[in-house]
Image 1 (cartoon, helix red, strand yellow):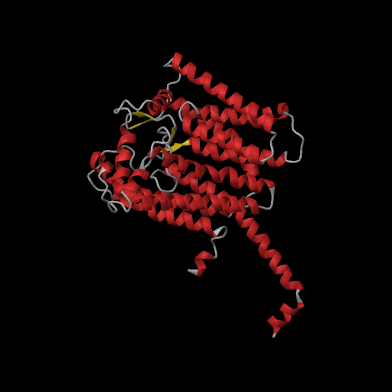
Image 2 (cartoon, rainbow, N blue to C red):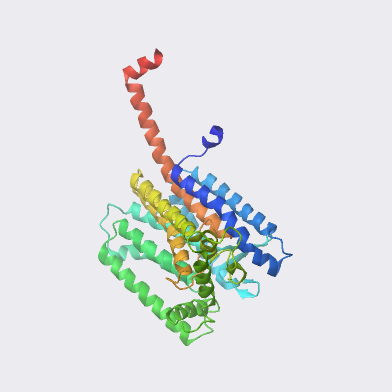
Length: 400
């Protein structure tokens, strides 16, 4: 066991949360997939469990490989990755992939492999890395707003504008977190106000155009507009079917839950293995299980903040916050949707929901956060070794 742990470096708290969430995920995924097995398979849930295991194994491979990369390399990788993700987003929108007969223009089908990939989440990780790099580069400079339009805000609005038609929730999350990151990075507050105004104006024009010309955006615009309208209008029970079933599942769980695998609402709740898996968790493990899951994500946020605080460079601090907080943010939104605090968004519960893209991108982001903590650990170890070498009493005691 010691031989295994010597290859795992970085913050042990984050490693612990990852392990706990990953192991626990098999219970709700295995339970909720029984409905999918009945509807689309031969009744066996084993293929879904093996698929989830394969996603996690590949995710851990990504996590381990990325956390071994010195984090300063991510600066150059973000510059190279930015044009790549723009191209991927354009291809994704133009293809309009269909999954199970439904419009799934958020997904890109990879040729010769036969799997689909959600490009918007990768785009968010690359974008936050790039913003962190830009802010670190201009940290001690007196910026004028005009100077930041092309190098900073053009990439931000371009990437988010390409995500927006097919995935409003992801675009909104990364816009809010980008604004948060530039605020933390010392970007002038008066310029942030201009950006917020521009973003609100762009969104308003986009929605009005989509409503005026329904066929102009052949993606999921009508879907997310209707979700917001349904959230504000509770009278349409059919339109709020998912939320109603999720609330029934949560209410059925009580304090301790009905027990692992004994959920009844998994047979009626759509997306029970992904978007609404938190409702199944609360039904089977009760309020205590739901609170424990929430605590793990909040503890993950705490460790991310600690790593950012102890980082040895401005880029390290901003990188940890930039790529780490979206994971917790998406988790809290997923849980808020299940209890009807937010409109239905389609956000997965990181590391707990089934789905390869969510798991892989979560592991990618956490690997980058761990890379920042690894650098700090190395400096602390080097400092301790230098103090030991310079202390003659310790050298004498070791000799004796």
